[in-house]
Image (cartoon, rainbow, N blue to C red; front, top):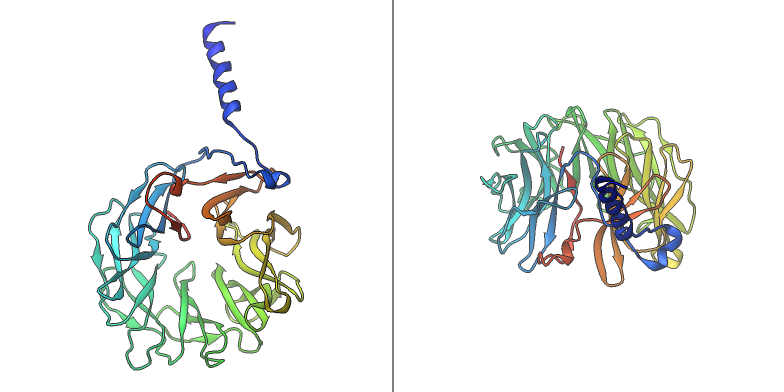
Length: 369
């Protein structure tokens, strides 16, 4: 055997020796594969709690290039990428109040956009990058949450909802023409409904007005379709996953659970062909986690990805090849992924809490466009 071939064989043997497999059948062993990148690299933004509070970080999705963008003694949360991937919008808690800021991805040019006397949080860029949605308690008369919009430089701020009840969790349609949000105005604070309005705040329409229950986890699947969860019993009981057209027609039930089960927190894959969700058993008012599941978008082929465990956020890898989730193992929360190729392989991502980065908790991650 020549020297170059011998070196190749030794490298392969070394890699095999370092690799440890994990499958759902081996769940008790809790052995995880090291993360290996095999795709075009993108960045991930997230908010993480450290010694002095929450900060905004970015990291390459192979775990390299970790950068702490904010390093204050106050909290910075809710990062959102601009469509061109050059900036992040976020909420900054300073002098006892939350306001919206933007920052370049190298940490330069942090700019304050809002200065209401009440909290402004959860910024969302419009698809063309020209505007930013956010939630605000800026109206001192009502002291409730409204949906605001402003230009990306902070100018032309305006309240779109002007309602005495809470309007929250706004998101743009893919074409930027309409805005989806949740409001408890119809049921006078008891439960939330799904609303759609034009981008200028006109034509606000309740899509769920003819139905009972509470609605949440709503997201655009395309310009005309919305996915969501509907809980028919109080306090998050008897929940299932549905879709509806943006004009309020075409109600379709995707999951089919009955008491005492609840399917919650649906997230559609990037190509909209599959859905992940968390399953709970809710006997006698309790919430017992029953795992992280995936199914086809029509409700068929339901399978368990992670057995019963406490799962935090869960979302799709940017190419739909795996699912990323926050998992409580023992006394530690960390970020993992599970492959959807049938192997059940689990990777621990980033290992931020083990690298002496001063991080004790990671909030949901956001992919660079």
